[in-house]
Image (cartoon, rainbow, N blue to C red; front, side, top):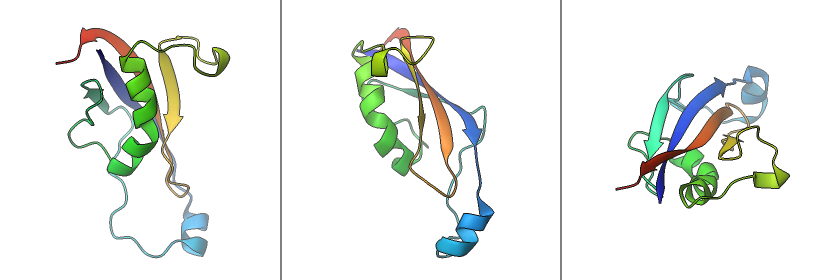
Length: 104
């Protein structure tokens, strides 16, 4: 099993949707563009959003076990995936990349 690098590539914010549909939330997301996390195989990296992990974890698990060419090869790098979290108000796009480093 390999480690997987998770890089925050883009964050979005839709204030019109938030104002219209969301109940006020004091604190929703800490992800910043450029942040890099390393998943040790199947383990959620410390400080990584739990909600985002629920969306990403199946892809992280697959990549850590050698999977590639998701969805018929949509990624230029077959050992990667671009996945967004499930927050429709503040979606975050993550680049997942299998590394050659063995998980602990």
